[in-house]
Image 1: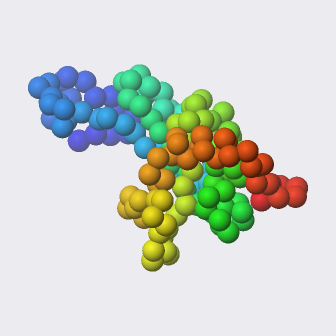
Image 2: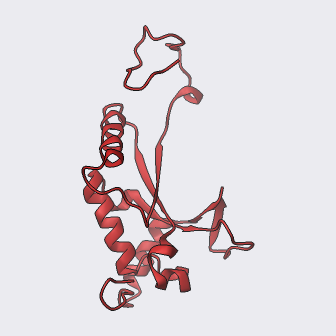
Length: 157
């Protein structure tokens, strides 16, 4: 059994030295609430940085799924197609990128479909989250559309 702060070595109980592809970790997905990003220096922020350091040391890719973007931006709540053009969402993505030293394209803003019955055909379900079927293409399309960013007065909401 593992305890907090202990490293796994080849002498750890249950260590499997003959691993197959099914035994290996392929990616870490960190799910963050867009309305509650941990502030720098808080215990949660420091814990995530500690985990990221261990994940990076093992050369495991990490991605961030940024949930509840519709609660962070009224424009996204009204029209999900604004998710990649919203100044508010862009600011949150930039904040997470800077705070955790991750490239912005590793951060995927999504809408939470916890209370939805039907989702748009442009999106597919993954548990209670709805992830664009092609997030990178959606971002490029949003930037190439020539349409201005979606921002509100003052806070960008």
